[in-house]
Image (tube, rainbow, N blue to C red; front, side, top):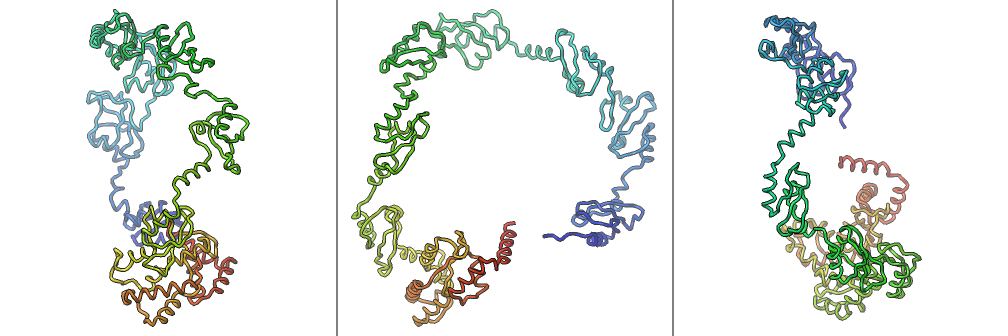
Length: 614
């Protein structure tokens, strides 16, 4: 964490640059601080501490920046040199407009910033141009007379009696549309040229309007005969006749024709007669019960031959889309009795007393599994779905393997199956590998048959020593090599404690297995019993020697208890008790840890983790 700056620290930084700090307190590195330069003792400057330290900013008077600023006398002299009379009494900066008077136009009051004057700016009237009315830094007060004059220049009559602001809409009257009332802002009228909206619409329509002959030619190209003698605009429907349906007369707008629309009868959307509608119903086997046809969206009564006692209705639009009798399509709301009959048909006991709709779950009980209350939607029941437990039993029976088939699969791999019965594909089964007859391991039928798994010890051998892609000649330390082959012992230890820390009860990915009997003592005893000298690398032993060491190490670990501990707790235990420990030491440590004796150590670890993340 950066240390807090003080006034003494700031004063020291200013002194290193040769300046005298005039402040008596320090706020922050972004606060402007007054100081004095020894070369300009009569001047007082300001700078931020961060700018002084990082960017090396120097005294503004030493840099010449302050010397560039003009005084009022210098600005006045610039105007007088050009023959102008300066009307201001103070000077702010070179970008601020200053009022002045030209000797050739003494009745005009002008304004210009000093920087533009020095760049060659002159009186606009001398150049034969009207000055702009609005300039930055100059407020020109407008009056109702000024606004009225602007509107009259455009030929409009202003209807307002007072002027508010340049952005306030003002009512006016156009001479071409005296019965219409318009509104426009003075700013838009003078700056953007906005005017009467009705004149603008007429001008736009005149540009887009087509001649009647052009429209007639467009209809002729599509094979239509235009019957109208007058064309108004592109949105007005006009009558025409199609060459394929000369007895029909329809209407369409010119814009619709341009977008690709055309004869409704050619598109199959023309208005049908009652006889045509009746014939359509008869073709589907239905009897139309209406005596007149209104339009395509009106529902009409009809009778289905399969359900003559049902009252059915449909629109011609839906009928043409393929819709028909809802009872044939099973698309009619069911009654509770009908739903109950569906459940009875399957042999299920319905537990509900009312029916809402076919998407609502309904409780039921299967006679084969009466202890389970299940739920199902009516639409799912009607398409063939049912009891889940019956479905699982069916699939199990369909895919279940016989014990002889499973045994044959193990024998095909060369393994001896030690089980006498087969439960399911996911249950691990004991077997013996011919390459490791002294080892007994487990594997599920699913892993053996579908995942091509094998004996775990054969798998270790295929990936160890020179068979491993990262093999470097056996430079791995003996301790690391031996610990890698204790994975099965570590897994059993985790299972015994439910994959949780023995101290805190937490399930966490950083669990480590603590040896209640130190590993280095077990290792040394194994080497001593086998008569081998202790060596550093695994390459210092032959493969036969390593096999003997591993076999003895496995056997010794059958008597050693493994205890899962969180990584930081494991380190803390050895920090407190060392590496020559017993099971009793772990019990004492657990009591002390849970009593809060090592809370300071926990807080230190948590802050270290937080600082690493940040």
